[in-house]
Amino acid sequence: MGSSKAARQQEQTAAIERLRQHLAPGAPVWTQVVHVARSGMSRAIVAIIKGTDGDPWDVSYLVAKALDRPIHQTRGGVVMGGVGMDMGFALVYDLSRALYPDPWECIGADGSYRECCSSNDHVNAGDRANTWHKDGGYALRHRTL
Image (tube, rainbow, N blue to C red; front, side, top):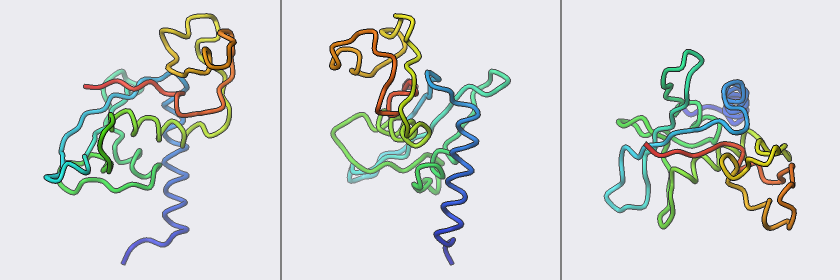
């Protein structure tokens, strides 16, 4: 029998808190597509971050829990449905929004936002020195393996 909604929500909250401890705004998250369904409509994507010891750490299970998404049974990646876009980016964007749902201070507030911030808020707001972002989806940096 599946876990109850309250238990799933508790697991989700715990995963978000654990990931927040290791992923401050500006932290990179590497993704790799490890499986594509025959239909092409879904993918299994592995999420990797730099661990506290500097070694790569596969956080796919925690990401799946944080986003309430399934893990691929044989490949171990987070299952993402959809086509027509970079699904690795979509995974990191969704994770970033889950970890930072509230406005956050831009990590490039010192003027180096071009190297570290992928949000258009700097240009679209007409204020290149804008230091706060409404959308948490850009708090983490996506990298592809």
